[in-house]
Length: 283
Image (cartoon, rainbow, N blue to C red):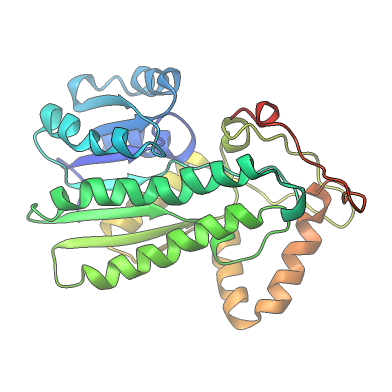
């Protein structure tokens, strides 16, 4: 589906890949409804875009079901329709083992990444089904098909998004709604800061991967949507590890473990917890 002159909703539009998607869409002639939890981020997007009324700003937490249910009416009131949705809102977890995570960190990741995606799909899909042609895109992750130590709950949320999106693809095959699952590798964004997570430097055998610039990631995403791709692999690391995980899953898991283990904090002593309070990670 060509995105020029279409109305596109972008969640997470106040920073990172979401913001870059908004800017690229507007530059390409789309109308955009940018959604984000942070009003300051949305205002920054608006300043960078300078797009006038072709851009509308919507402050909402995707984890808040009632707030998301109100979004379609607000978008239609401003733009007249909804043709596409790109769900870029998401957070990571602290780089900790499952046993060292506290319950609130786990619940927060699942609420934003999984339930937030479900809320947006269920709110906007009825509107997309009414259009002559429409597109629904979710953002999963390389961590949604490859196990990353210290990101088990994040990976579980993104794996669920991936499979849900693939199921949506099958459910919508006989409709005019196209479906894409976006699978980014390392992208240079502020997701750790926005998630309230401090990432320590890699150590030991780890080597920091080259992060793809966010504008380049946005262009890959939008090109993939216009080509109606079901899976949009963003970055050379995502492409390489997608093939590796399918051909030799255990070997791929060991490879990523060697690269990323330096981010993990020391294991908790028996009978103790290495938990951090909710305030410590910005919830």
